[in-house]
Image 1: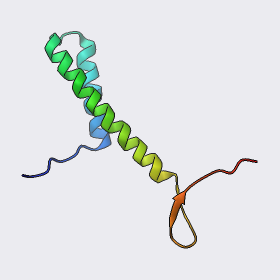
Image 2: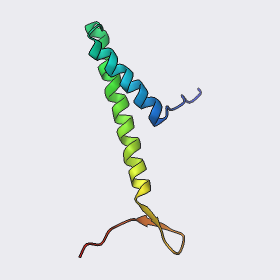
Image 3: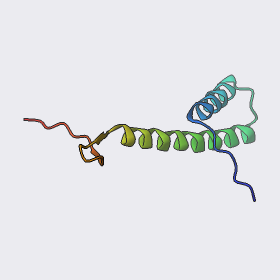
Length: 76
């Protein structure tokens, strides 16, 4: 079984925006609106996870020995 291609963050965001526009139009039958809302929540969760992963990667610093560690700002 072939693995399904994962959408990029931008593709997911565009899909989410389209769902919101559809729901805001008020022209979506209730059953379809519920399905679209459920799909939107799944997409939002995927986007949130991607953002958290990106933030974790960005907050790494390269040490002199070539290893990565979490970047911390020392406050006085």
